[in-house]
Length: 219
Image (tube, rainbow, N blue to C red; front, side):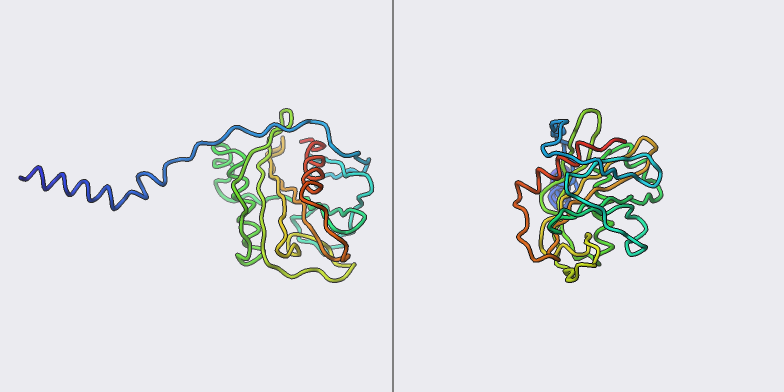
């Protein structure tokens, strides 16, 4: 009888903790998506370079840099836009916190993606959500964490405004994160913008631009 009571108690505890015992098991990390190392668009000679010099990338033909002039947050080192001002490419650093290297060393770009998303949550007072799951992208020996976000924010309404993650409205922003050879963390975001009033690129066009810029990264 004593054994039966103990068995019932154990079963009850297991049922009450099913979230801890089963739901919270470590998820299996899927293999990275391998991308063609060649850009799908014609790229220009406009070179993006990080402040530390450990990251470079190219812009598509016709794209140009926005003069920051101290208007952008200190973590953003370059912003570029397409000729129609309907897309902006935002290049920034992801600030390290205590134990960042340990977590990233263990979980790779998935940990970087969580850090990046938390950064956007802070900047938007939590007014942002992730669309779908984080994936990893591989181009040659380079590996990126990749995810998408949406939110409801102020839309820039003047041509002089700097497009960036605070101005993407309910539209979807594509984000890639990675670690450089110097151990610095970076983010590249492709952000739809509506400041020109022109029709936005299609999802297919936006994805092609995103992939093309990614293939030019060297770090």
